[in-house]
Length: 264
Ligand SMILES: NC(=O)c1ccc[n+]([C@@H]2O[C@H](COP(=O)([O-])OP(=O)(O)OC[C@H]3O[C@@H](n4cnc5c(N)ncnc54)[C@H](O)[C@@H]3O)[C@@H](O)[C@H]2O)c1
Image 1 (spheres, rainbow, N blue to C red):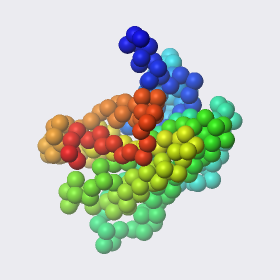
Image 2: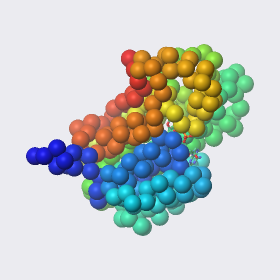
Image 3: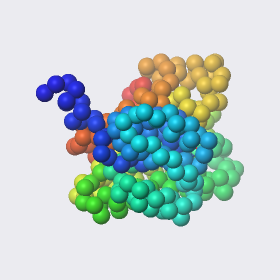
């Protein structure tokens, strides 16, 4: 078999329908574009209409189709309506990537409870609903599928970014994503649905602009990373694409750090 044919067999997403949340920016945007490059019809979900339009425009001419869906993942009814629209348009969901999340720092002793609830609503409940709406479609068609959640090293370790970076709601939500990923993987394995997560370290996106806008702060953070730098969003996207594709057909319930060695 030629290299091209082997890669085609294991990495191509031609004929698949992919849904990517948080697709207007950062890791979600790079991943959704990659899904289109690999041939998937891809639904770009986000609450940011301008970012969505720009992300979809970047995909003109790629092998897969790109379509924007504006949705706030804190609005749980709206998520259902959105998935109904995707299934009506393309017949079902084969791949789901949950990248959308918010992060609001603050000391735990006086952390605002409304903010706590909103972060959990978006990062954990919104992700859970997207998982089960996708799984319902996969189970109904009897074809299985693949889900990749974007967790964080902050869901696997509390000490990794230091004492100064208190963000209890984010860390609780990401810890929840880690174990929800394992639980859904076991529950849905018999249906042919694989569920995995990536756990990024520092990635150059707007979410960490407070670090990347200040060269001294970025250098201090990069110093902690054995590979010595922040990841680019595409470097997370390629690992997600691998986990979503046939190359990872025996991988499920795993949390894969993509962190330049931070957790090593
Ligand atoms: N950047 C990092 O260093 C880093 C590290 C670890 C984990 N992560 C994770 O990676 C994922 C992607 O983050 P990113 O770095 O690309 O950030 P980002 O801010 O560039 O992108 C996040 C996207 O999620 C969308 N979003 C947020 N709340 C939403 C809501 N309620 N409804 C719909 N969309 C919403 C935003 O509009 C944005 O487009 C997140 O899950 C984040 O926790 C990022």
